Length: 258
Image (cartoon, rainbow, N blue to C red; front, side):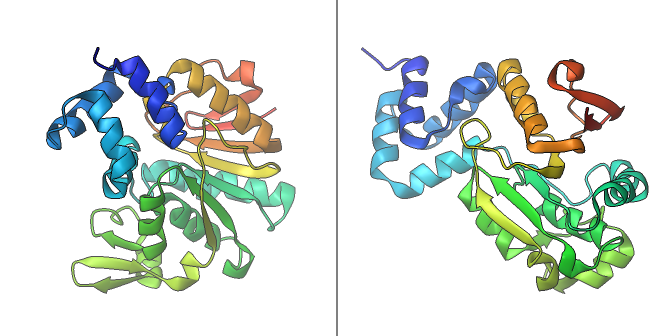
């Protein structure tokens, strides 16, 4: 009897610690079926066997599951609000030694954007960002720090000139920005969350999760924040029941721990 998708989810959880049941099933199943067909593998059971046998396929699969659509200063108006309102407010409350977490950071665009935004208010050597992602391949890419012209289009011109060097068709972010970010692997559904955060950024990622998983993550983010700490989410997201998780809504994309 052929392996069902539910049995496949169990097998993947054991193999990768990724809980596929936390993702929207129709969307995720379609993505996985596309990958299986691409490799001309016959069904879920055979695919699991190949994942165990081929490290390259295993890494491709994990990379494929994590949806990495990222760019610097995405939704520039929200970053302008961060620069003018929220960074000064946080510094005013907690000083310049801030604990900031960029969760599901993808290829590094977001944490590096944070460093640049903070550099307008805090000396670079006082900035430290924790950046985490499930996918070690995108973390490796983030550490390299090479980006396309399209990726950095939203970066303010003076920061672009200051912190990027053109190499062929790509742009290399400066080492002094890279040095301010610590990258780690982290599974939002499974691993312990950091504590004492003044500011958390997690944008355009949770739209792929079920409502139950989203609620649990927003609750855990709240526990990670200090009192009055800020959570910055994406333009495609909204915490409808934010009061239930201990937030007050400051703006469409900014939520404050009560």
